Image (cartoon, rainbow, N blue to C red; front, side, top):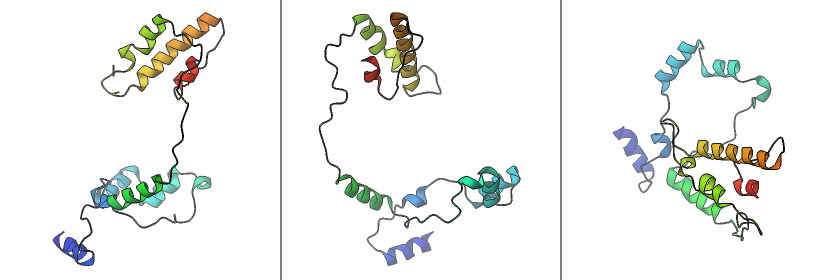
Length: 161
């Protein structure tokens, strides 16, 4: 390891030693061989042939640029992001003449049960949001006497409008 680091320092003495690729955690050659043996394949190529249908495989090597350090990648991403133009967005600004009944506001929108985990293996709020949308859809179908109600987890404000 010291020889490799010494070679890197002589090639680029000011290069940052913390390389993202070096820190990547993945199976090493021995672990890969054990996995392949367990699955009954002699190589990753044979496993790929068995697992991925030929019609969706590329069939030629990817034309990828050389690996970058984390700092170089962040610098390039900042350069790309600096080209963005910021415009005023009116999405989520509300709707005219829209009255939210207090019972809905209190029991659906402000209910902390929708925003906290309630299963030990699911720490995010998505399940609670889904349940709130299901309750909203049920309420909407009962109020309108329609058979179905739409609800989008991607844009809940539009659904409510």
